[in-house]
Image (spheres, rainbow, N blue to C red):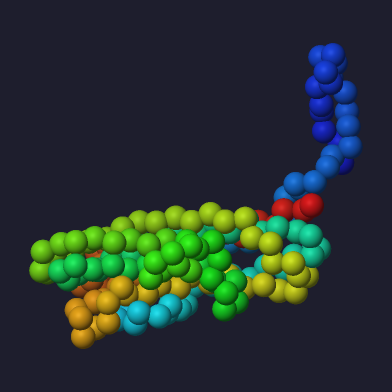
Amino acid sequence: ASDKFLQNTSGGVLSWADAGGGKLLQVVNVSSNTNAATSNTAWTDTGISLAITPSATSSKVLVMVNGSIAGKETTYSAGCAVMRGTTPIGGGSAGRYADGACVDHWAATLNNYHKAHWSFNFLDTPNTTSATTYKIVFASGYASGDGGYAYFNRNQADDDHFDDLATITLMEIGA
């Protein structure tokens, strides 16, 4: 039966038992080769988002995201994050990108190019049965006047040779 699982008792005897929590209730996914550039030091929307409607307030949502971020300048940093609505999730606890799910930092000589692939997994507790949207955002570590630009899902030249595919996969996990 679909509501049972095979368990091994302490005596080594196999028996069927009622299934408990942790059931995978739904999976949604989006892939996009949308790309963007910013010199903004605040989170900038990439245009890639996905919604899921949890079936119970006790459900958790496993958020899995990947993409790439690139930059070009002397000493440079850029960051990516995932937001539930307008709230960054899964971020660090200190630093400029305290709310970021991913931070890439590098030092390079002038006009060198760097591109980093990143992935992010986070078990979120949205505590709602309303449609909940998750989106990818990114930011430059330095404003354009300081030479800072961040490039999401593409290379600095935007010459169509190195565009990437970003994905968001959301899985509702039942209690």
